[in-house]
Image 1 (spheres, helix red, strand yellow):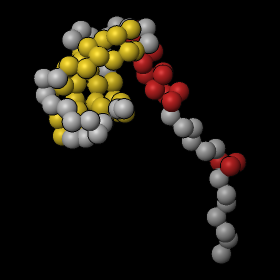
Image 2 (tube, helix red, strand yellow):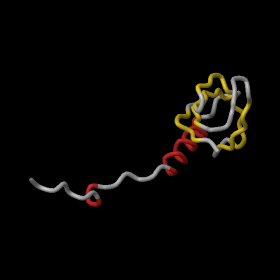
Image 3 (cartoon, rainbow, N blue to C red):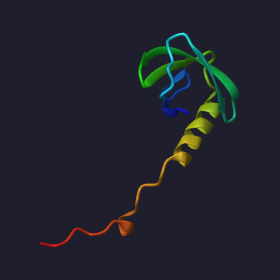
Amino acid sequence: NATVHNISADGLLIETALPLGPGEALTLALPEAGPVTAVIVWSSAPFYGCAFERPLTPAALAAAQLQGEAARPAAPDAASVPAAPSA
């Protein structure tokens, strides 16, 4: 398992407990792009910077970003946050 912290047309930043090193290739399944290959270009375990072999299209990048937004937990709205006690 890996967590994507950032994605751009040229690459992504992942966090994983897997032992990875520069030069290793990963295959990712991205919406609108299908399987894409990224190569690790730097590592500072557990974080790894990866470059895509080919840049993502604008549509594939937007779809990946939207999928990431949908996976994040929603922030609580003001109505569900308890009020601080008055002094």
